[in-house]
Length: 168
Image 1 (cartoon, rainbow, N blue to C red):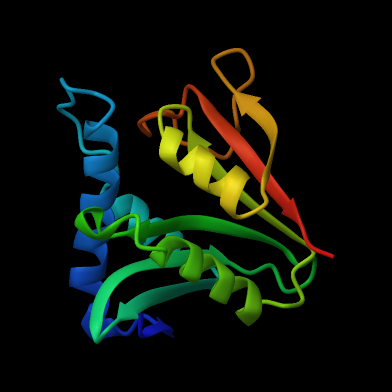
Image 2 (image 1 turned 90 degrees about the vertical axis):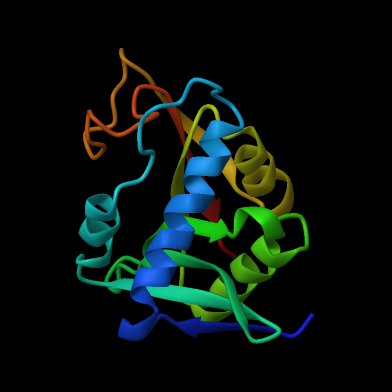
């Protein structure tokens, strides 16, 4: 596999956002047969991309963009956040997600802690982050213990896991 992780350019943004939304939508549709809501809106993606310290990466395999990730780098604390990591739905299970994550760790060697949130229904992602990337579940948000940083209207906001990976 000829793999590269590069910064997303302005020219990539439309395709990048569409692929990201499609991957999240199809992942949720695999769990919910009666899904009639948009899982990840362009507005939510733009909100993440507009934060100071945000870096968007695209994964290129054999010349084609087939995935990517958006991370928030907190320069002062190095307690960084993985907002989104995706692989085009039809190209999953080829090791691309693992390659993306491994490269992000290499590109951010000063990181002390990585954090991410995963909705409860994303069983494949829970497996991926715990068993392949070395994250640990450290908190479970639910209607009785809400994450103050999550919008109420976000699908899966009622029940999601907070993951951490402490770097050596």
